[in-house]
Image (cartoon, rainbow, N blue to C red):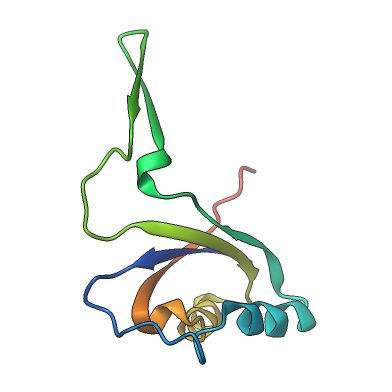
Length: 110
C-alpha cells in the first residue's frame, strides 16, 4: 500500500543537526528496500497559490489557504505493508525529530 508522508516544520521541534539529520540516507535505505516511490521539497508557503471555485467563479489567492506556524516543507511517497510499517518508516525520517511527519494512506480511485 502507498502512503504519503507530509514533511512539516514544527517550531517546537528539536534543533536541526546537519551532521545527523540527513534525509538522503533515509531515502537511500528505502530505495535499497524497493519501498521508495518519490519525494521532493516544496517551495516556501509564500510561493503558494490557492485556487477555489465558488458559484462558478474562480478565486485565486496568493499563499496558503490556512495560517499556521507549521508548514509543509516536502513530501515522500512510500510503499508499506501496513500503517504500522509506514509509521515506523516515518519515525526514521530526520524531520520527525526536528519537525513532524504526517502519515496518510493513498486512497486510489477504483
